[in-house]
Length: 390
Ligand SMILES: Cc1cc2nc3c(=O)[nH]c(=O)nc-3n(C[C@H](O)[C@H](O)[C@H](O)COP(=O)(O)OP(=O)(O)OC[C@H]3O[C@@H](n4cnc5c(N)ncnc54)[C@H](O)[C@@H]3O)c2cc1C
Image (tube, helix red, strand yellow):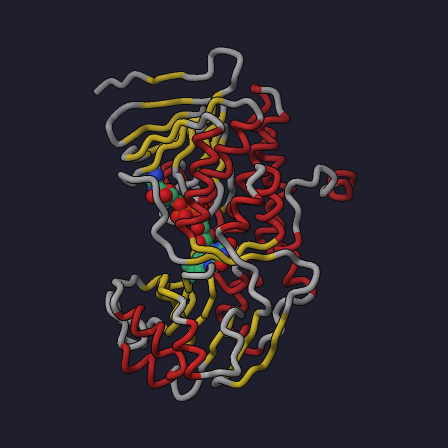
């Protein structure tokens, strides 16, 4: 069967084709469009929406949103909890206000709608129901409907199961942790929670660890005035703790009785259990194709930086490609990976270590090198002065 390859961007604007309208794909799309590119995003889902629950964003991503002029909009729909509290067997082991690092909590559908609306305002074309099945290093995407599209730059932002990555035969190592998580957005139920534990600050993020008699952890994250993000972590080999689509309410409330009002709400919602995984690719680029986000560097959520790294790398690859001449884009992508990737590699290593050891249960994790990625400012043009000079 013969296919016509549609080539865009033959006028003054250079053209990018992006696979995936998640946080990575949308960030790359906005960053490129703001630099004068024509951009088309292919999203295999029939609707433009994010199905996940909540997310914590740190300085690295808040700087990008600010560069896009989205700070006010983000602040209106998110919150900054007073403390990040860690408890073990319901005893507080640390209360961190994470000094010096801006951070905010929000729902994922909210962040997704802010980014997708911004992309559309910037002139990005988003095609839903458009599944990418293959990429070629010359800058081509083949779609499930049989057509081919090409651009000066192709970005694979199609998540952990990336068709772009796999079709380019980029090898990777995969590490699965023993634990996984089921995530929900539920009503805050603040008054009911206060009635059970009046001395608790229910606006805090509270990481309720429990290791004895069984490992069952609840990460409690207020996302705004109305919505609460709760993530229920259990080992993959605990059939009751990881039970989905309906959680085992008796098991969870027996360990975390103070959370009964919100666990009851979660029990009324269908959940999916995600096992933590870390993927390390042999390379992130091939010719005119760059991989970003979970397609390139899925990581355990221990430091809450998977989305952060996805947006950082999406933003910086757009910057690197824009600074290069069209002919030099493949080389510019290789150089981008050389300079930017070490931050993500280190974050993946730390996150995997924390996930493997359950070390976050000790609290006090927002210190020293753990903060490297959260503090990073991908919008600072001088951030690599010392690296480039070496
Ligand atoms: C439990 C948990 C908690 C987390 N908490 C945080 C947190 O607090 N902070 C944080 O920064 N990160 C967090 N993360 C990580 C973060 O969720 C991910 O790293 C981030 O969502 C990755 O974004 P992405 O755009 O790369 O991929 P995705 O969000 O997976 O988006 C990929 C998109 O591509 C589409 N797609 C897939 N295949 C194709 C195809 N073939 N063709 C076209 N489209 C396709 C999908 O439909 C989807 O829309 C967490 C992760 C987990 C599991």
